Image (tube, rainbow, N blue to C red):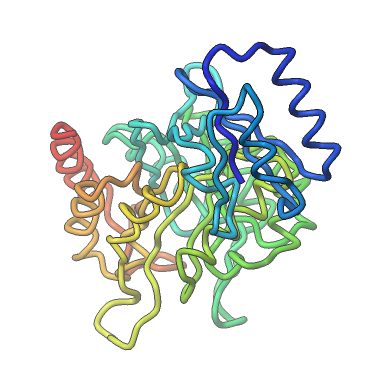
Length: 336
């Protein structure tokens, strides 16, 4: 349920209404807009007398939200959320017209590799560095990442280039290791790991939430709701392709999800064309298409030697190829 207040309501009146609503057993999320204030009511709102609430002098109107996601709902929070990553001069904003490119290898393999790639992608326009330290793999015999050592190498790359770092978490038990990570990624396989999501909701840190392999938009937004319900509203959604019957691409990139999510939610949404297609030759066109569709950013895999990469070399661009893609994306962005 949302309650829209009339203009000119005093802080004392707002506080009085909030206390009354909380006494009814619901939590109140406040959205202060330029021209109006919206109270989002979360919890068992069926016991709230909507006619009584509508009749209050300070209330403009009250609306029940039918969707199960409340905090992530655009009607609950009309203005775009802008997520800030990093700090100081290296801080990056995503959402609300702010566009960013995250780039780097699927896996951190060595200090020379990650720092070299970080320097390359920064020169070409990337503003955040990605790199896997903990790797969820379909086969238990595949490379699982350097784990703690990989995180340390990412920190060294950040120190060398200034790029905020993005890496995937696998378990809530690893949270202490991620204290110094700028943007924590939740991978597709963990999108519905609800215990992990609740723990991430207790952090004051941006979360990159990837869409599950076969998840609907509603399920995806409900996963974001798990994080937000615990207090953390710094969430970036990531469309990374969904599973289909066609063997020619790794997944199917759901471009329609970009404008649809923007209708449903205020959260920023970026696109991963690397995992969506699984083919290096398709990353450029899908990056351009996602940008044109209104994505708030891209996350692209880049490796200095894709043919010998320990993970996902077939979908990784070389630094030279990334420079070309970033240039074309920049030209498309000028149209916005």
